Image: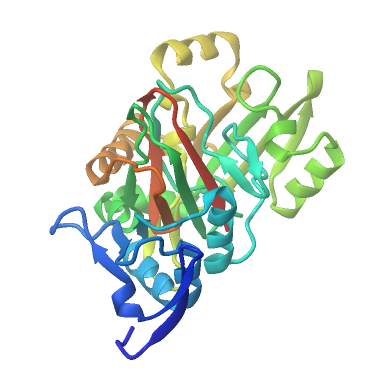
Length: 336
């Protein structure tokens, strides 16, 4: 923004201060070799994140499209309500977590807990709901309490992931897409009631028909769904190609060997809680999955959370995950 652009901002709820946009914030990076993520810090004590974002929304949008990820550090967020207002300010109404693939709890409005997997588990990098044809364009995380150790939210630039994957691998996925097969039953993974946020089968059927998800009701109130989705997406604003799917995460090979062996002993492959295939239903080769996971690992950026941090991601440009942790950790999420 030009230095002649000024804003009248409420600082710490005590007084209004007229300052130029250039004086309000400072841009930083974790290192000089990588501008991912962009770090934005206030130059004024108690600067409200929502108030600043409201006064300079175009700046947030420009920087997010450029970098894919922005870490806001040191701002006054005003708790979960303030976090929700921040997302609404820059992205409009928040989305409900329907057709979810991981356990979450609603905290307030459409703010949810981050994935409630055991602290010892690593959550691989992924773009939120890229296993669906309907997904958020933005996702934001707010650290209320950092873990005693670990618990970072690693991120990766989806453009770089796509660039580094072999042409042969990408071409096969482009031609076929990714098929996700899920079996919902109580006691193993998510039930259909939890995933679709309803106990009404007719609502589930309407949702599936609207999104062209094949569905079949099985014995004992079980549901099977399958859908072929994109493997690569083109960002609607930048025109950039991004790797955008969860084949590596849904595939049975992602599970710990003992868990995988037990599931395969208990269920036929078609009855597994979740699995991923090429779009024609053929199996994805182990070597392909290894290449995808290796590239994600090489492109991963990890930074320690600080309480009060807000991480904003363009969901197509940036993938995210979760590292194992010790102690209590509280990070909440909003999507728009």
